[in-house]
Image (cartoon, rainbow, N blue to C red; front, side, top):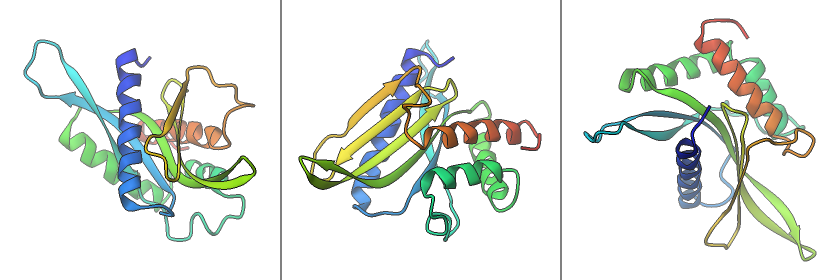
Length: 186
């Protein structure tokens, strides 16, 4: 189970991902992020951990080829994570992470995408980052275009019927990643 500190650190990691997406500008492609933690070498008496996100590469036509959109993309990646090219990408990422920090641990999957909302009868562009951690906790970051700060909500026990459409796919990615990391087939 993730500690309060780990949950707080993960929210900070999502805020950094939002700031990086903001620097790239609006309308950037969908980005899938694998979030892991590792020991932070401070030399202090209490061992600290830091979290980092790594972009998981999507194939050129992944998002546009599927009219059902992002939820279907997440389901497809989770279902095929044990096959090429997704398996090659995951093995490479996990290999680099483990090489740099052998006791690193997967903490969450996240997806960053642009969406639109209707506010006061007017359509507004928003950036969303949805994430699910290894405890099933849901993180939702929303930034309205033109706003300085995003809104970030964390739900410890999300209702699957009230969760965003990305929740099942992100949860499936966590399960598939655990199976692949353990050497099993998805």
